[in-house]
Image (cartoon, rainbow, N blue to C red; front, side, top):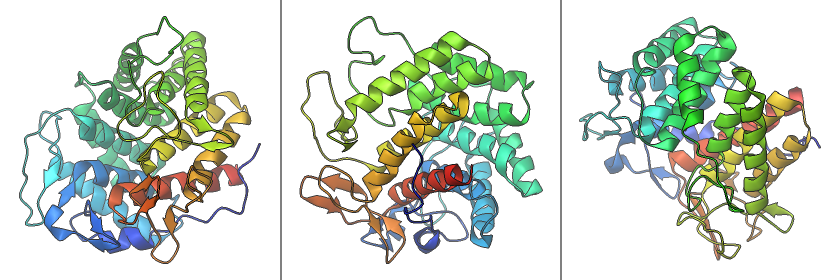
Length: 338
């Protein structure tokens, strides 16, 4: 199956509304930025990721990549940890650590090194990555995000030993399940597809067929759990356990985006076009092929809605949801080209 060419093209229109010379603002009230809520490293890492994945097709993306890279450099402590929360007044509000934002920063930095056509962004990307990649987080998703950055580095430089070690360490954290509930945790929580994606990337890039197969099986299981009828029904914000009913709300755009990203990694590793069908389901979730039949894209602003409730979308258009939508549509466009 192939992603259809009827899906909307990604646009940076609403991203531009939320972004100033410091970075992308985290939240919006409807489509207007909430300046008082400030910025976060999580979202600026996402901004860098989608900007360098744009393949240089827009001048906007090149500007955003530079802004986001500067944000990450400022957020990064000399020991490789990252701060996350920055006020609109440009005051850091937290201490540096290795939580999710650390992992997302490494994912973005590794992707910048591998994908950016701007030599300065590429150079700073590997600088950021190498300053932090020797650290380890106790959290599985933080490590998984960071490991996806390592996978990007290995595409560009297969001999990068620190990237190899980080990717292997993250894969080793995914404990096999010994029950019919194949997930390595008691419940699905957030960004779930990232976990099998790391196994797939590790198996593919490190030459371990058993790890690759385990990742593919786990992703196929997750897609089955997150499918209701003929459409994607992502794990809600409260999580999902073995006997929880479907559908459940509220559903987040980042869940659909994580499924899309993992599906493309699986397709790249195997050439199995079934995974393009999974990508199509993730894109379809944004286009209204979901549990409510509601479009999650605001075609006037170019933003995406923050969540899907049983009665329809949450109409706020924050950075996380908009960047998740852009990332998903980018993957659809790139697979059509490929």
